[in-house]
Length: 553
Picture 1 (cartoon, rainbow, N blue to C red):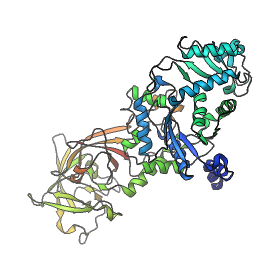
Picture 2: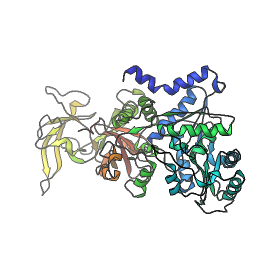
Picture 3: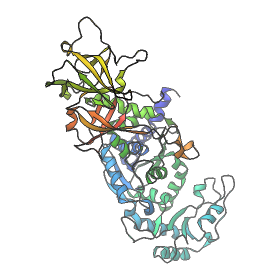
Picture 4: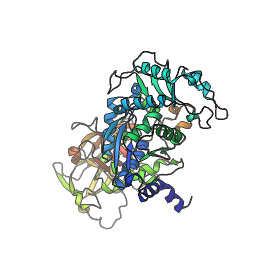
């Protein structure tokens, strides 16, 4: 696909709206909506829809509503509603109005009665299995239900009885009367209402009759005067039904449904049912586990609202389903944090290092920039003392080729401080290295040593002044690009998706870090203070992303 074609496809919704405005359609207004079902936490796929719906409304000085599609109370909860509101606001968007499909239950019922009166709907006694059998196939037409010819008076009486709780769950359904021979199976007398005695989180036990999504959605759009109903491609085949309902009822407003490709991101699952399974079977630690593709999980991992909005902008809006590489998302947060996250030092697997020629009772304070390219972020103070901690991997008794860190008899620079030399290796009885004895060159603070070249630079913390911390190294939850392609998606779970390091030490300046604060731990990666488990006594940091893409390796 050429760059021109890519740009056109990514902007086709914008082009349609611009054309509508130029033709003064809808009096030049743009009103969109984001209509999630509150049956789980929002995920990265919803972020694309949020950015599109709120973004289009903002671009054309219009409004975007938040509407909860709460017509299936069996799977819905107030917790999910609150999480959705929190996520939309965190992403940086503000809805014009907040609605619930349940706000319209009485109106929807009246609309259904009107369809019956006009001969466009009937009450059917076939059960779910029989309805499927009568529906036909993609190559064979369906056949009409014996109840299709029921009189309007009998249908009205039965439908009233359904509302009044006179019949058992599943005993009757209300169906649209369209065309059982339609090549579009969605038009073969689809169900509009079903009997279901379930307590509703907002309406309580007022209703035992709930409308189906295809009936509810188009009418909710019309009631709210939505101009452009933006939804994903799986609803394209439902558009004729969307238009049929509105045409038959001659609603004052007739929104235009426009479909776009949903987000398919490698190494993730975005099925709410499967995400709930991951949570309920304890494969992850809740909906906000940083490995989850939920917005709550990404927030806890350290993703920023701007990085997610940037990602949604980069992938664009198209009419064709395609897979997006995980690296695209990771690069968005990597670029954001590289630009904006203050620097700090953390030692994940400490090795004790004693500087023998440094005074025992001395501790100096080094002033270090928080960001090498952003002086406006200020400086921080780092204590330096006789005993410091370095990474175990930054020392090699038998170094591999091109090893530029500390070796026996070799020199290395400690980040933002002195050049040191390893003089002696101390081991325990089992032969494990437990301490290094070193010397430092006091003339190398902020300058190169005389007469020799030191290539390596390693990070460190002072043993006495550093803080204990737990670092959680999160990685991709699945180890195959398309977990859904597996016979059982759980078999594709990456067993190394989380490594917990409990004996880490971080520099003293992080004592003031607050929940959600993000840092670049130099030479290690980008980390965020965990919003749930971190305390002043025991800091917990979640790895957001590595410094560079190392997944392929």
